Length: 177
Ligand code: CUA
Figure (tube, rainbow, N blue to C red):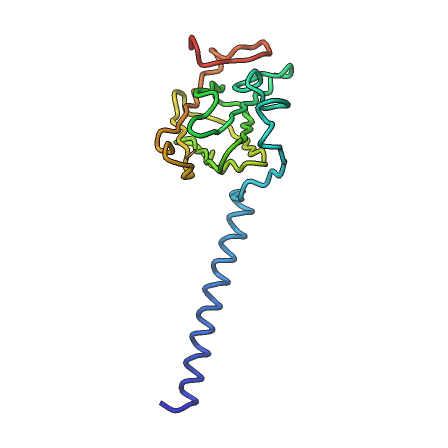
């Protein structure tokens, strides 16, 4: 093999590598535009040392809240090794905002059978907006290793039909549902 052959071979492989990169870049751009596939982009900071003492994530404010205009917000604290509350009800077929924070270490939240999947990083509020369509209980395991109790850390999202969803504003819990 002459030096020229080697050079030609290297250029050819360089071209193949460049083409592969361009194909992957095109797929990323296409899926971002066509299917709105993107990483969670909400950047909102919160002090992890005091989030249980003041502000939005105090215990009495956790869980599912229906606002005066009917908007549904679910606030969950992910902590070693539980989700608080352990179960949160949501209405089917309606936009729901999930807001999550962690006081200790990095956790992950994933609602099976839905597109909800995000990390919960201390210092930041993780926010996901989605519409739940499948009725019933959906398991919500922690999916970031967070310590020895990680495998015991899970919660439930309970998707209720609109007919069972309370029309008046206020808190909604899984108890007695
Ligand atoms: Cu929390 Cu793993």
